[in-house]
Amino acid sequence: MRRRDALLDGGLVAVAAIDGVVGLYTTDARGLALTLVAAGGLLLRRRFPLLSLALSLPALVVTGGPIAAVIALYTVASAATPLALLVAATAVTAVGLGVSWHSFASVNDHVLAVVYASMTSGGAVALGRLRRKQGELSVSLAELQRARTEENRRIAREAVAEERAHLAREMHDVVSHQVSLITVQAGALTVRAADPGVAASAEAIRTLAATTLAELRQMLLVLRTDGPEPAPLGPQPTLQHLDELLGSSDLDVTARIDLPEGLPPATQRAVYRTIQEGLTNVRKHAPGARVELSATVEAGDLHVVLISTASSQPVAETRPGAGLGHLGLTERAHLLGGSFRAGADADGGYRIDLRLPLDPR
Image 1: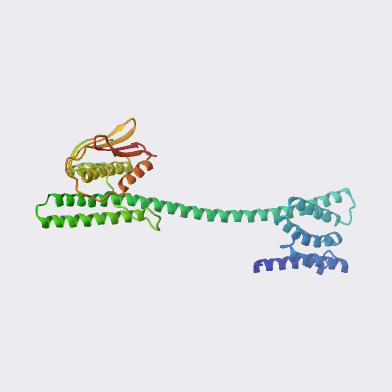
Image 2: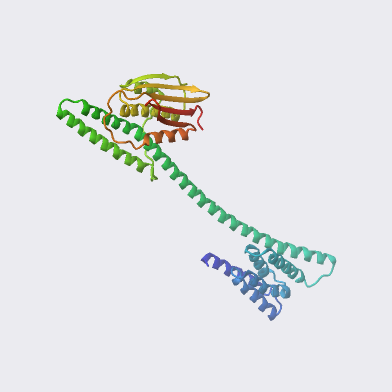
């Protein structure tokens, strides 16, 4: 028992015993003894509320002292007492309060006794039930606060995981794109170089670039797991950067870009990354191929199609990719409520198809 509760119980016992000690209700030794027993019974009210009430009833009936009985009834009402027992305890206490009126000279006295007994016992029960409800609400509030804290932690973990996956996609699209070009160019130089020293250097560059690319992909897999803190991202490309992307390409690209202005940033990045990944794959796997690119609006959806022909030049040996580029593009499309498909054509070419709603969910 806490110190505060012990002091409170001691004070209640003292108040209940005062009327017996100073003779407010008691007129003989028996009444005094019953009052002291009722007061002492309050020490049991927390663990045995019904027993505490039972010990207070004799003093209530004999002496008319209501203090111990009212306190005990309040405790019964505030405890986890079955409703039937609570009703019985209230009725018994009300009867005790009524019969404690020893003289009934008129009908008014009877009415006053009933009103007194009803209000006193009913008030004790109401306060007790109110105290119990307050305790239940406090427990519920604490549980809600804990649940809210856990929910906030879960949301934070999911946000971190989503941000890491986003970061992994961006790193693949940006860094892997450049390293893949280094690998392809070095491989081509290895095949075409007449000087053995140049060919050996190019092969070394290709090997190092391919190793770096493999290690980067391993790091991207790690970034797709949960972590404590999200990493910030730099400025992201938009549709305005498409001209720069296509202008820097050494491929034979026929492009038709007819997209409205003001598209959401996430949609613009998805279009840019799709075209960037498609051009990178053509350089890696189909050098010399022709590329037809279209980005238009059809039936309320944004539609990007990139079609490449079969390779017209020897393909330098490259290490197999991890497939994270297409995986990232698929995730982007699904997050925006669209779809992404990629696959080989019957004539040996390759086709990439991206569909996104103009107003993503």
